[in-house]
Length: 119
Image 1: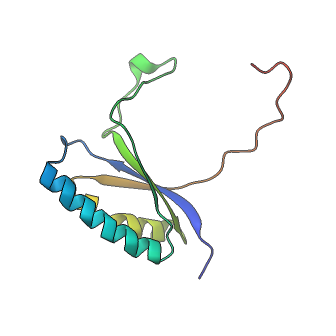
Image 2: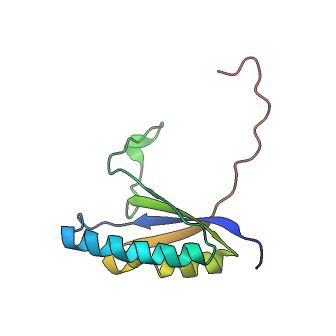
């Protein structure tokens, strides 16, 4: 098998909350989907985001809102972007109004050694 790289899938959804029946159905579907992809070596690591947030920075009042808020992140291992996108497009959330964006994940640039004057 070729080397695996880390990708992140960003989930967005603009509809209201799922009904209890939808949530239960989706949960079962995701569990089966995750087992299949983990068994295939994709090493899934999901992270759900809370709906509350704070916008911080000098331009917060002028921030253009994203078209849809990010609701969850899924880190996964895949050969390349096409492989990661194929995994993402089969996610059961796609049938419940979620859209996804797939990006390569990389470590931040190495930081310069801290100086004594750094805050």
